[in-house]
Amino acid sequence: MLMQQRFLDRRRLKSAFSARSVGSTSFVQALRRSLRAVARRWRRWRAKARPSAAIAGRPEELFYAGAQYYVLGRRALLNGYPAVAGSLFHQGFEMILKACLMEPVYTRYSGEWNTGTPVERAEAIHAYTEACDREIRRLGHDLRKSWSRFKRLHASVAGLSAFDMVVKELDDWWSVRYPNFPRARSVMMTTSRVRTTSRPSASPRADRYDLCLEDMDEMFEVTVPLTYTTHAVRLAIGSMNPSAIKDDYLQENRHPLLLPG
Image (cartoon, rainbow, N blue to C red; front, side, top):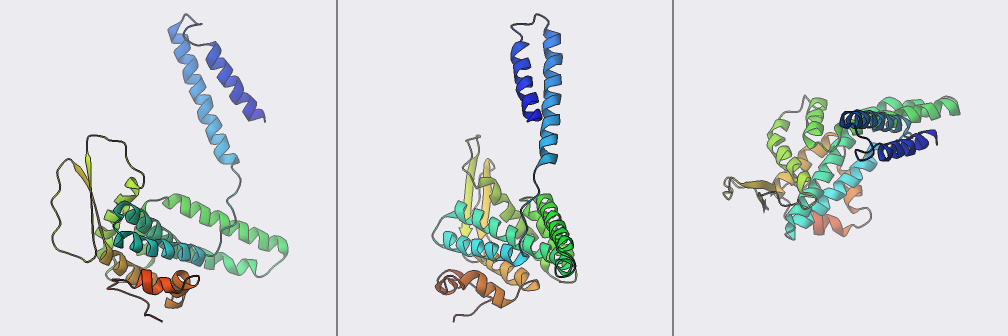
């Protein structure tokens, strides 16, 4: 309440000391700088006073959501919706990678809330929540940052760097999840169902976005088993709708983790 009152006072001051009511331009400029400084302090205070993040769930719940985004991305691409497909694939792999990165955090804290007093268990859950929230906020929506962390986590696995360009191109799609206001540049979106060695040429004045279904399926096939079982994949995709495995996941999939049935 006190901070809200200060915010209202700041607005009144800004109105009262406008350039029209104060003859000295330098004084008005100094006052506006002071008000901006107050606004910055207010925002920092609000950030620190923000309530703690909601209780973080198990990482596999994040993985389930990510796998479902990935499957819906396949459907969007096969139906000819490139911008939607790119956004869904980005969201899917972002959540899948974050789920894999949260597994060690969950393992580190989960043993503490199964023993001890109720207070100690509550403190362990709170510590886990804060750790997850901190890590997820640090990663943001930057797919390349999550991918770099994922590769460090699985440094002994050969071949992951082969997907670096796939991740970079997929990360670009996040910038077009909303239609952009015209900025004197065209946008060229290309999708393909299988990997090819040649790509259509694009104008130098065009922002280009490429998406290959086979790349998405192969990256899913390689990365997911490093953390999750095929049973978890089947639960994520087909637990609520078993036909989704056949109709959406296996359709034109050259790198399936699951078999029909």
